[in-house]
Image (tube, rainbow, N blue to C red; front, side):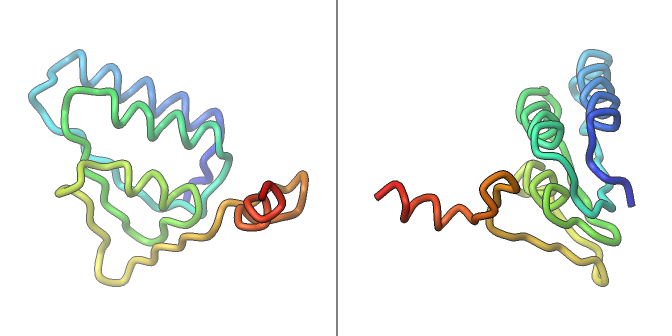
Length: 110
């Protein structure tokens, strides 16, 4: 599968905007097979999915892990699915800079 990075994010964002402008009555289909990747490019894809007029269908075929699973849930709520043998992996947010998980940041802040 494809890792989520700046290059693929820019291509997908551009395609979604183009398809939305070209014909906003046709739904957009997003087939996902990704081990995850970078946060900011992934959020750009997610935000664009929420912004465009057509409904975005998200279909997991193979693997949607980490940022890939975040993009999977960005699809229209009734138009998300995973193939029978596909795998979806989610995990708590983590910071490589501080080497801690989100829960530890909350405890530290309190």
